[in-house]
Amino acid sequence: MKKVLIAAFAITLFTACNQEKTAFIDNEKLIENYQEKKDMEATYEAKIAAFTKIKDSLGKEFQKEVTAFQAKAKKLPQSKAQQLYQQLGQKQQMLQQQFQQQEQAIAMESQKEVDSLLGKIDTFVTNYGKTKGYTYIFGKNKAGSVLFGADKNDITTQVTDALNKAYADKK
Image 1 (cartoon, rainbow, N blue to C red):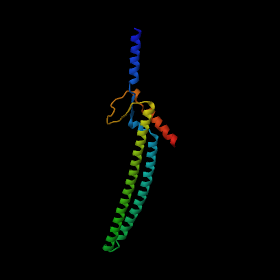
Image 2: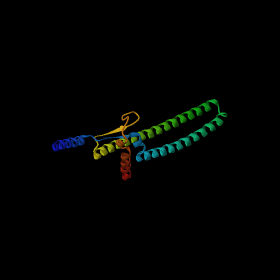
Image 3: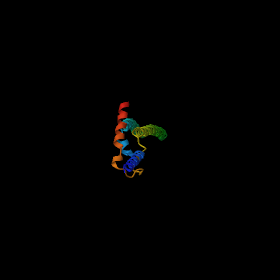
Image 4: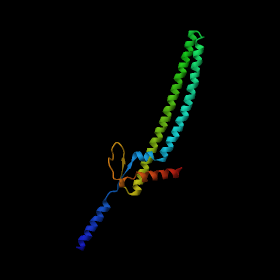
């Protein structure tokens, strides 16, 4: 009987040792609560606000030119008025292209930083999983990669806290 108990205990111990450690992270919560992402958003909000301020200022200046032209055009010969009107149209087109280029530059820069941020998160989670002995860490999102996970296997808060601590330590 003693041998049977020892064998059962050994089998139970062996089985317990061979179980894989798995968990999941709610991707949206992780990213939403990651301080570096919040800081990046604040930076881009400031850039966009500054750009909008410049754009609005230049738009107001251009509108003043248009108003002045309209008042002046009534007194000019039609050919001269047409020439000035074309110049204003070209200036407007140039301003619009300039604004569009600046908007695209900000968007590209932002996308590059978002991609970099996601890469940092991926590397961090990989290292976190290795350090903590996980075989798998799944990502939960609305697309359904993990449709359900027991709360005990949700390590979103622990990873977010560790990620924010690592970011704060770098600052």
